[in-house]
Length: 114
Image 1: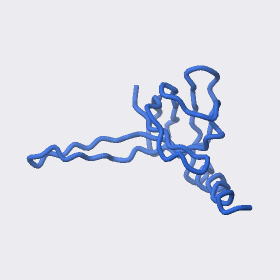
Image 2: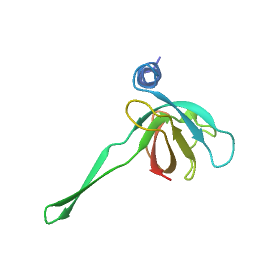
Image 3: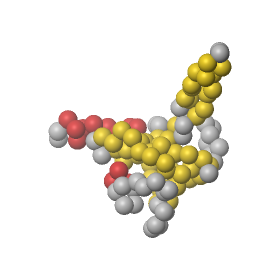
Image 4: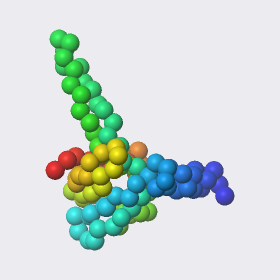
């Protein structure tokens, strides 16, 4: 097994594992059928200094998932993600607005609330 294959297997075995960091989300493509996929959901805080000692803080929801788990193998703007409520966040439906960090068969989906 190559090093890259080992990294991918580590993501599946540990990071996306539901008993560790992962959770099931429902991925709803703009066209096609919805599927449940393992993903890591997170809302990192983004802050911006607006000057005169004023700072705005917002949260940018995102999921990190395997490209091969997506229905078409590729995300599209306008697709949606349903996140189930748990101890860390309420249930919500979010829209895919862009992608980032597409490496090793994984993709970060940048989301926005409806």
